[in-house]
Length: 249
Image 1 (cartoon, rainbow, N blue to C red):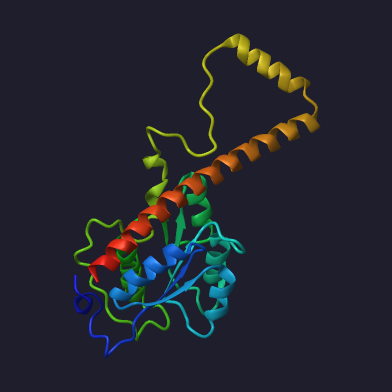
Image 2: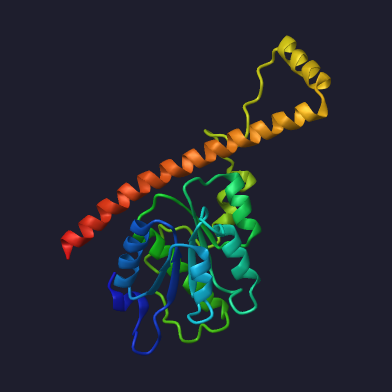
């Protein structure tokens, strides 16, 4: 799809401004190159604070932010945007190496428009952004009259915007895997169940609290390990993609 057919006549309308917030320099560079080829104005930031400081000077049309950030996390960024008087209509895409029910619920709680799992291909992210911009124009959000029309007729394979509404709905609960943080149902062993119940009854409140805290920390460690592994795989894929893009130029 060519630049002109995608974004229309750019001499008659300004290019959409996309903020991409991620602490990975490789990701920022690859996404910047990919979006600029589609005639987007791209502002990449390594942290939330530097991005939010620029909103007043250059208003965002779409914000893409990683969930795990060194200062404010992606949920805080999304909440700030959605509650802002001027930017509340701005679509926000959250990125996460782990996408499960807990992450989806937090994304929904801050009114995120999309939740995308890492790793992903740059063109997939571009299609999601175009789809959100089209929905934004159709809704007549303030300040959108100068945005170019975006052709999304060829984007049938892409899920519709606001995929969070159905990603983890009750009717689509995963069949082969369990939600993050859940534990398998115990086997019907009466003696073991009775022993566990008796132990819980004898435990002091302090001991129970300590066990819950240990369990919470264990889950947190597993989550961080999964995030780090996803980040490593994503960086490898992006470096390979960046090299192929540079070789083709």
